Length: 313
Image (tube, rainbow, N blue to C red; front, side, top):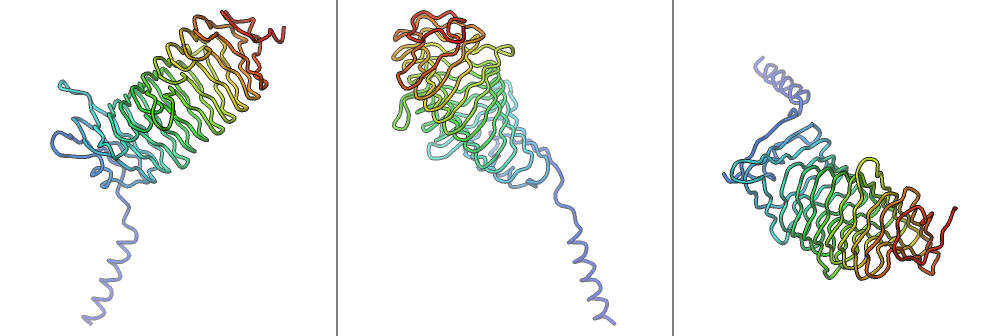
């Protein structure tokens, strides 16, 4: 009798364990000044639920986020300082793999990368600062991203790099990229079938080109939402090359040096249908290269010096 009872009890316990629900959605608040960490908080969460981590203080860590269906990490600014991630030199602030993640209101300082978004992740960034990374500020590879009010500054090699990726750039500023061993210091490096949509974009003061489009890369400028301004870069403003395209309607590309304000070459095209201002660039303002670089309706824009013929009149 006792044996039957034990067997029945064990069976009921086993059934209860099988039907016990996983941990529910959670909101966790951590203070890194009190020796809490984002990485420890991640370990407490069910990746299949919608979760939020609220961050205060200064965190000194790098983080890997993998397989999260909906995760938000939100910095909370206090009287003493904004929420800051000081990334060790050998780590990445946020390495995001196969996840849907939102990072908001964080200062991410240092590390190899500020953030990396890969393997079909969707990464939404808002009001963050990414600075002083030694490889790239933010890198999207086979992923989708949005930026809204972010600043990417003073990173080595390039500020923002995309490969086989898409990004919508809303009120984004990219500045101060520094030439390094892997890149000339481009503000935004758009390569390998990637597309950026500009809904208010400022790219200024980078040691390489402001925006470099290469390998069937594309720039869509939604000027009715926000202005596209590319200025003060030291290897030209915008390069459009290797079967790439750029819609530059109503853009302002001024005071770039080292190459033309806009360089179009390698079976590529830039369109100027909606006007724009392209002046004051020290090596010419719009240059059509010998390898089928085409400017569509340059006569519609204000262009100082160009060798491109008027087209589609």
